[in-house]
Image 1: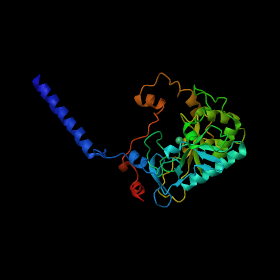
Image 2: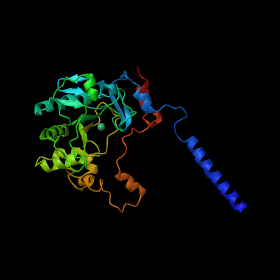
Image 3: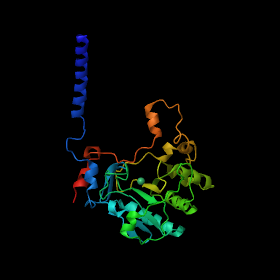
Image 4: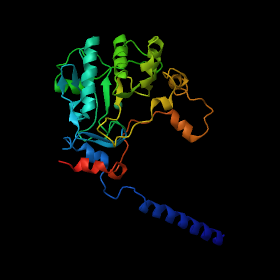
Length: 308
Ligand SMILES: [Zn+2]
């Protein structure tokens, strides 16, 4: 018995050593190493560099970002205390374009939610992406006025255009919402747009013959009180990493089984799911920002962080 116990002890010591040595040689954060989320979250202004997108939407940063004016002729930036109304000049130009189109379609303009932090990078809360200055959340609440005070922009909330059971759109969804989303999808700077599946299902049903734009509209959990527009990599940013083209993920306009999955199996996972990985996939990811250290980001992000 003692012999066996000794052997167990030796074997477990061996594995402990592997785990321990593995942990020390791996790039895990050093003790007291600050998270990149904290470092980027603390920056109040853009880097003094030429505008450039560095890395991937969920793993990168933004050099020389531009601040979206808090109020423009056809938009207002919301939740100014977050200081997330920064982006690549392409994103600022896009917001100007789309909000003007919204004003032509019957709204006063657009309420603009989170874009990126002044230097991009991972955030301390909410988003995994929005790191490179090419993502913007736009409220589903149709603005009636564009003279909201700063406190009003903190307290006012957007509205959901989807039922609580996630299966269909509700009475807040209007033809103007659809026209604005179509205008956004037809903008050549736009790579893709994320909305709740119920919204895309409705647009698939109502689009008629002109459906080419629908492929850019991608279903995703949440996204019922805002839509998320993601721009393509700008020409001035050779180190910007593109997302897999939609044509490689989905065929045609995407009005197919992969879309209805979101209102069927996603909400009611079939019982026969055996592997842990699969059952994990069926649950929405928590809305927590991923913790990163500087070594997780492209090396250029160190300069972005340390620039004047
Ligand atoms: Zn977003």
